[in-house]
Amino acid sequence: MQRVIDPTNGRLLREVPYADPAQVEAALAASHACFQDWRRASFAERGEVLRAVAKRLRDDVEQLAPLMTEEMGKPIREARGEVEKAAWAADHYAEHAEAYLEPLTLPSDASHSYVQHLPLGTVLGVLPWNAPFWLAFRFAAPALMAGNTCLMKHDAHVPSSAAAIGALFEQVGAPAGLFQDLPMDHAAVADVIRDDRVRAVSFTGSDRGGAAVAALAAAEIKPAVLELGGSDPCIVLADADLEAAVDVITLSRIINAGQSCIAAKRIIVEDAVYDELTGLLEERLAALTVGDPREESTDVGPIAREDLRDNLHRQVQETVAAGARCRLGGELPDGDGFFYPVTLLTEVTQAMTAAREETFGPVMALLRAGDAETAIAMANDTRYGLAASVWGETGRAEAIAARLDTGQVAVNGIVKTDPRLPSGGVKRSGYGRELGPHGIHAFVNAQQVWVGPKQGG
Image (cartoon, rainbow, N blue to C red; front, side, top):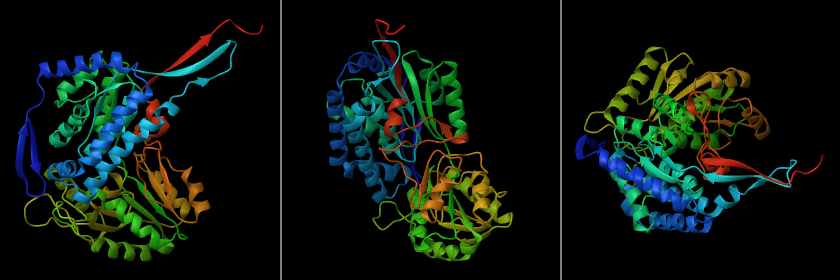
C-alpha cells in the first residue's frame, strides 16, 4: 500500500494500493501491443501527441502543481515551474527528434552505408519523488519520440502526481498503452525488468537503488540509463564576481528545499575570498522564508519525509561535532511537519560527514581551499560525479571544467537540466545521458545498413 503523508503536518492523506499482478500483466501487454504500431508512426504523428500533452500540462498547471505541493512539499511557485518545464521537454522533442535521429551516412566499400536509429520497444522508467513531473518527461519525451512505448513506476509517496501524468495521455487521445503509470512494489519492479517485453530501463534515484536496477538489467542484457546521487562541488575562485555568485549559489542550494541531486552542496572557496563570501551567503540564506509550501511567499518548504529529515539532521550534527561551525540553522524546529531550517556550516573539511555524504536538504557546507589547485583536488575527492560549477574569470574557470570528474559543469552560472543539453554523471552518480541529442540516442537501436554492390577492389 502506498501511504501519502503530508510533509507540512505529518498526517496521513490517503492510502493507494499497488497494481495487482493482473494489472501489471495488462499494462505490459498493452505497452507491447502499442509498440507494434507506434514504431511505424511518423515523427509528425508522434510529435502531435507530445504537443497535445504539453498543451494539456500548461492548461492544467493550476490543478497539477498542487499535487506535488501536497505530496512532497514542493513550494507552489516551484511546482508551477516544474509543470511548465515538463511541457517544454515534450515540445522540444516533438520539434527536434527527427533531426536528432537522422540517419548517419558512413563511407565504406558499400554503394551506400549508413546507420539508422530504430526504437527498441517498451522502456521502463523508475523515478523518485523529488521532481515528479519533470523526471517523468525527462525520460519519456525522448523515448516516445524515438518510437518506444513507456511504463512509469513512480515513487510510492507521489501516487496522485503519477496518476495525473498517466491520465494526461488518455485525455489527449494517445494510443492505448503508449504511456502508462504502473504503481508497483520493489518485487514487482524486479519482475517487470526481467520481462522480455521490457527492452530498457531508465532509473533516477540513489546509488544504492541504481546498483540494484543496473544488476537486474545487466543480468537480462538490457540497456539502462542511471542518474544517481551527487555531492556537487561549487568552486569559487578569488577572482569571482561574488555578488553574482552568492545569489546563484543560494538558489542552487535551496531550490526544492535542497532536495535535488544537482544542487550545489560543497561550496569550495579560495582562501582569499572565503570570509567575504561566507558573510554574503549568511545574509542571503537568513532572508529566506521557510514555511507552508502552499503559500506564495514561501521559499523553502518541508523535507519530503520524516526519515529523510532525521538523516539530514544526523549529518549536520556529526559535521558540527567534528569541528565545523554552524553559522545558521542546524536545530530541529518545534511543531508539526518535517521542516528543517536553512543551515550554513563553515570550516567544513573533506573528512566531515557533510562533505563525504550527499546532503538532501537546505544545508550549505563551506570548505576552505588554499588555492585553485587545492580546490580542484577537493572537488574531485568524492565517490560522486554528477555536476559541478566554477565561479571566476571565464577563461580560467572554463579551463578548470575539463579537470573535474563530473558529467556536467556550469561556469559562472547555475547547474540545471535543460532539454537541449545532455545530463548525467560518472562514478557513483551513474552512467548514460538524458536530454539533448544524447538522451534520445540512449534507447534506440543504432542499426548499420550496408547496401551493395561492393565498390572498389
